[in-house]
Image (tube, rainbow, N blue to C red):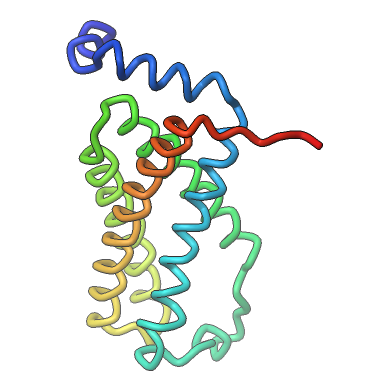
Length: 165
């Protein structure tokens, strides 16, 4: 595996990755910025684009309340993966393509599973809504992964550090 890695990664790319590793605070900033981008795209979908297609809170009609703790865990885990699974890998390869493809795959499969469960258990979910939701989440996750790559490159190139008071 190391041989394959050495073929595709130049010395400059390795220096970039090492420089990013030197400042551990960059990891935290990278994660926070990725979380903000991912949440912003989801808020855009839920508050503005989806408004009128779904009557909220439609789940409340079934006696269920949103599980906010589970939602927070999902956003944190997905943002960690976007920042360090997709964004960081793209930084090492010095290309946004791996971030886009990885984001697209994870966005597609996670939203497809989520939408399929909702289609089975909740009557208000129509096939049209499932298709729209899967398409948007696939797009949004791919864009958030590419944004995470850009954030990581910016943090590395600008040598951003958090100063302690």
